[in-house]
Image (cartoon, rainbow, N blue to C red; front, side):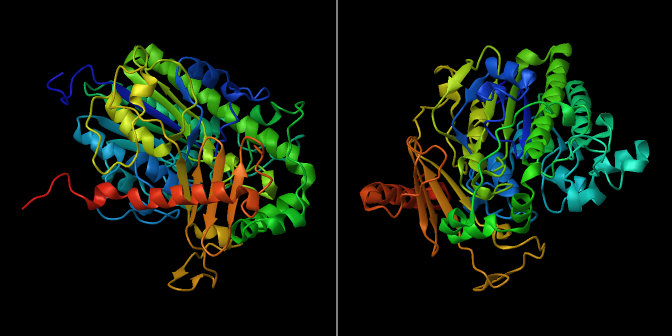
Length: 494
């Protein structure tokens, strides 16, 4: 290696695999006895399994930009899906590119504008984009469908009506977006590996994000499985929630789900099938690393940008601070360097960028607000001094919370969206306690030891007033100090 931070053959490649809206508990290695994830389970066995990882926003774009900047959403200011990044934002791929890496991406990015050209301008050397939904006109996957499966190009989310699972996709497995993402990722690995430089690949799956359609054979994989469907949540419970959460629970999609309870087991079966389909593709990609002789020289990360409520608390999708939305899987594998095993220390998604940079012997950017856990996962062999986190934080301001499906999210200063103001909500969580604060709309406090399902809000109970006050102080302390590096120079200059 040419100097402490020079590029050399010892520098590892990085394969970062991200699922969209995958819960922490939907992985066999994380204790789910029903789901079939043999490849990810095998990866977990030889990885550091960071089992207490929490995202800093339960929404796609703010969370992803935190992974890629190491900064909190209120700091990187990309708070809502499909908004432009602030001028001057430097993402992980640009920093790696400047350090001599070739960089590639496949799948979902959620940048704005949602084009491949814009993505390349952020520091990727190569890429194939598929953001789905309203962005299909920019999708490389949809363009591929037009050339190879034209009959499915305009309705690739259509379901069949001749299967037991009503969420069975009409599109065949080989044409599905998950299969496409896996194939393109493996082809990208081969192209990147053909060059002498170390490489970084972001392999980003659209699934298991809703809607729940999934192709055969995955749609029938769990036909005979008794699914752990949540219990019924009535109006009295919903009325007890803080206003922003209550409005979220009464949105059209949540109301539709509550009115169609017979579909709940099938939604779970489709969701599990989508995870198992991703598991196959990840397994094939890891096999490609083996075939190319790259497994020992590549850091492999598997994670999710946030979870999914899956009807818990009467909610669908995410946008809230319940564990099902903010607790995510995080596996880090680097043979011979990262020591396999479960780590239960609290970890944030802000911590991934500094951890990867220390594993690659790159300087951690001063702007990064996360803490490297390299020393924790290498048994002290690599990394800056490690200090166990006492708290993790999350925040959310997305206007989806206060709409009913209308995509016009125009914000009017002083009046909110559609005349409803939704001030920035904050969460702080310790090993035992979770405290959520909604400006002008109340608070929540949950004892995660006594109430792991987060069903009893004790914020208003006088017996818990000292705990609520302590957590509120800790939240204020985080808000005051999070941006310290942005505001104070390393040293005074005269």
